[in-house]
Length: 112
Length: 115
Image 1 (tube, rainbow over the protein chains, first blue to last red):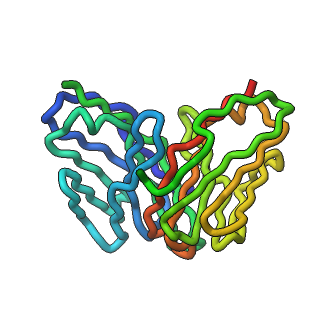
Image 2 (spheres, helix red, strand yellow):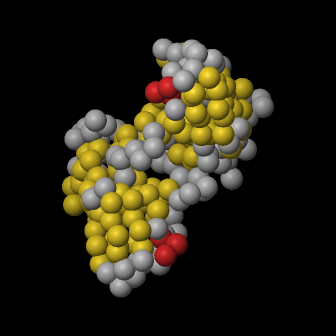
């Protein structure tokens, strides 16, 4: 299985601090995506990084991808209370298409 | 507003009932998906539709029956469900289904409780 696994399962930090979440996977991928889910809501796409990219930025988000280690990290800088949510990585296959495989997520809590 | 609307938001039903979940996307996408999200488990892909044609069925029990009458609407018909089917059911869409390098747009889900 190429299921992504996020680490840590839960993270609690103070507002203004940086939050780092990690994702590991098992097989070769086409791309890796990060999603956010607020309580009681659906998933929201944050950023997609392709297998030939090493780093990508979007606002306060920074994603890295290390295909040799089969891992990715999501960094949220200068965290805000509104960043409190669950964060999921999802991996896309090279072949067989259609399918994104999601991890179990990291529950991030930002304390004011 | 994600452009994907799911109704109802909450549903409580007995094991012998028949009900349907509805999903509508206003994004002009060609692919639609049903996922099941249970506590402490990864998101499970149930069905994939491309231009109203089912392209993937992930060994889902027959008590779940999808229907896609057009590229904007997706239904999940439920009958004779079990307590373990209680979960959040999420609908998603993407521009095309032929490649997994597309972001998916999710609705807010239907919280289903089986009594």
